[in-house]
Image 1: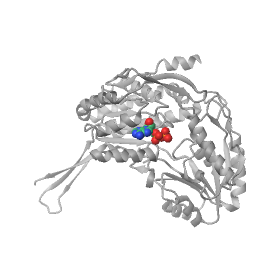
Image 2: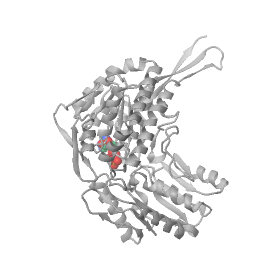
Image 3: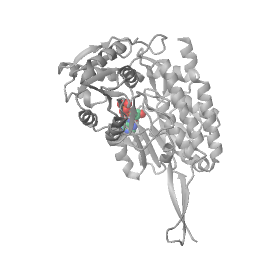
Length: 485
Ligand code: ADP
């Protein structure tokens, strides 16, 4: 345990406000739990409405000078922060594994992916641009400029403790906005360490605050009513996203919403089946299935269904389950007992309704919150597990006979985040990509996230894009200046 304790001793555990860590006004703290054991790792300060007010005051005070800071200087600070995170890869990786549960190998992958948003947006900071045009009437000029929207609030989930923060902080800071981050209760430590890294990189006080709280509904509701706030960016459940969209109406806040998913993963009978099994492993088992882009429904062409199912079940059964910080482990715990129980309830209901279990299907006794890597098929239409996000290591397979049926089933959901399919037919690639109602499509691959690409959903999966050249636009207002002559 000693290297864990040494690492934890380097992580700030106060509220990060105005460039440093401090206790909450109430003096309260809450525990951060290791999901592999159920034991507390440490505790963090618990912000209330008065702390949030102080954080927003510091963000509002810093806004003007941060917006006026040269883009090259903002870029340099983001670049330095990227370098420092990369230098501390092992610390960030172990910390995420401790508070979130994924394997250290996956956490290292998240450090590479999550830090890249800082480098990518350090490069975008100096390329914001605008445009000019001659008015069609010929008697004036149209000048279009971009301005930072102002102080922003980011609310992040626990499944990617670093990347879900950097994907918002990178573009906000690059654009010249200040930002308050409310990390998930389960995983506040990674964001607090990142705040320290930003301070080390030379970020001025007030530009970035981190507010862990055990009372998100009240703290966030108060911030959303505050006239100093100009934008909210949220990643989490559709249910909470709808609450925030409702609250944003009050001040007509700009919103970015990355909400739930129910990704279809379609395998056509002309696919390379070995490659499709590899892709399904990545799309399903990455992050233990706790990802909004996770393949929630595997739709497999009936002629190859048995072959695919058998191969996938063998691969999934081969997982080694245990604490993510143990060397041989390939599947860590779920985030909490509630999450484990919710996965178990979805599987149990499907099995009672007639689904067939190929491997797994049960809770693993504690300590820690483990569930067996599972494959089920012959899941009856209408089962809850086909309509809801599973957020666990459970592959659900259903069959189809025709391309039209596959597309209809894939689109039969209120969500529209990611979709995947495997085929070797180029006509089909273009046809099916166009027909899928989702913001992102993976063709012959099971992982699509890339800091250089726009991540975002349609339908009830969200509003706006994160990453790519699109990502910074979410933090900019467009101003039109009419010039004569
Ligand atoms: P998950 O199911 O992944 O925990 P949630 O949508 O519940 O997803 O949580 C995502 C983030 O939203 C977390 O930081 C959580 O604290 C925050 N949150 C939860 N409820 C509310 C709420 N009523 N208002 C604002 N934020 C909330």
